[in-house]
Amino acid sequence: MKYTVLWSKEAEANLAAIWLASENREEVARAVDELDRFLHSVGHSLGESRGGERRIAFQGPIGITFKVSNEDRFVLVSSVWAPKR
Image (cartoon, rainbow, N blue to C red):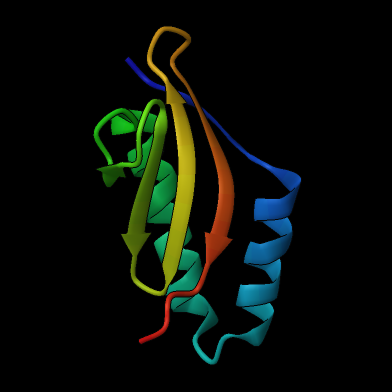
């Protein structure tokens, strides 16, 4: 069963800023595509738990925090950032 995935306005704005500032925009786009695909299919087990419904995950140059409602099959990405390498 798939999850419905939404990105908060803040997460979308941060992602846009990361993409614009990136030297490798394809890498950012690929990471987001992979995260989105994983969230749709295995949102409940992606990344690490941060208590309750909150989780954190990393893919390439992107880190996200998100909440998962297994009962509603819903994922909300609340923040996005570029971890320091």
